[in-house]
Amino acid sequence: MKHLTFWFDVISPYAYVAFERLPQALEGLSCNVLYRPVLFAGLLNHWGQKGPAEIEPKRAWTFRQVAWLAHRHGVMLQTPGQHPFNPLALLRLATACAEVGGTPSRSVCEQVFRHVWHGGADPNEAARLAEITTRLAPPRNPQSGEVKQALRDATDAAIAKGVFGVPTFEVDGRHFWGADSLEMLVAYLQGDAWFDGPGWQAPPTATAGVVRVPR
Image (cartoon, rainbow, N blue to C red; front, top):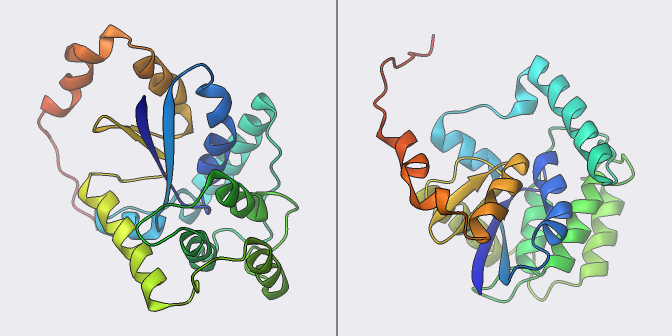
């Protein structure tokens, strides 16, 4: 059995689409999936990047493309009332639903993702946050220092592994980034010999010929 880690932030529509597609993509494969919430903004800050929704033309394309992906794969998706938004309350809620040192269940993650991507409402509207918190009944306080630190630790662990974006699938120390990497991930899990050849290793061997200096 392969052990797969799904690194995600509910702010990402690509992570949501990938989450919904994952069970079908893994059908027939022997995999155990751990769902690891991380703060996407923390990854961006570390690697010196902006999120797709922070660049206006890219923001427009992002929502156009994910609408197509949702349509293409039969995934229900409605853009939330605010985006980007602060996902911390929901990430901490998902984290608080796991036992100490553990990860939230797929059911918990599904409810948190759909809280954001179904209905088109504000994810941080107080009554909605209260309702989903009551429904999930986390064993730990989402606002506790313990839970906040656990989310920070998960984000730091992702960074230490070289995770730079969400969703990222990790298996056997290999990373597959983005909703569009699902086909590649499945090919690896099915034993495609390409992954043992130079095609996987070649890209990191190229040296940077130009380094852009921010203005």
